Amino acid sequence: MRIDELNTKIIEWACEREIDRKGTIQGQAIKTIEEMSELVKGICKNDIDLIKDSIGDVYVTLVIGCMLNNTRVCTNYTLDGGRYRSKESMLERITNEMFKLSVCNEPYDYFNVAKLVKLLESIAIEYKTSLSECVQLAYDEISSRKGKMIDGVFVKEADLK
Image (cartoon, rainbow, N blue to C red; front, side):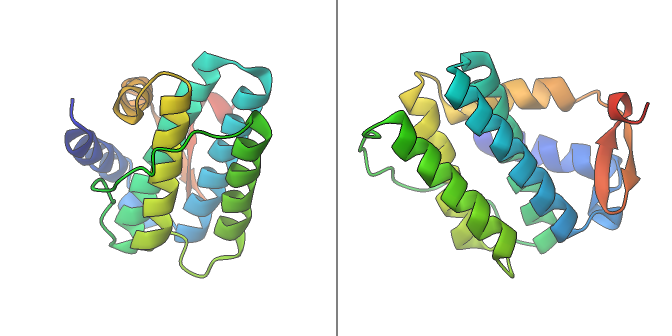
């Protein structure tokens, strides 16, 4: 599936779970940061499956955050083509973006999201995968997921027990 088709599916999934009505931007920003921390963990452990899963999960949280903020997701961008000098420089970039997201008044504005999408795509390329592959994997995993809205955040059924 193309990324724009996946965006539509993700938004439909979120609406079916009432995230569009009961979710909050602040709650979604916390979800994005949680998923970014999983990405950091995957990179530190060189766990390609966790990296792919986390890239997709971060992207899903960005799409939902944009939905809540009435912002469109940037899918038309140009990568600068540069590789990361080291794993440390990649981790530094991710943690800087996590910090910015945590203190930003509008975490899901178009330009903030565009930077994060470019970051995810560049990490995917670094690990010989693609953003669309990672998002497809994430969507396939969440597509039948059930859960409950708690304090503006969707909590999956497995975490409710």
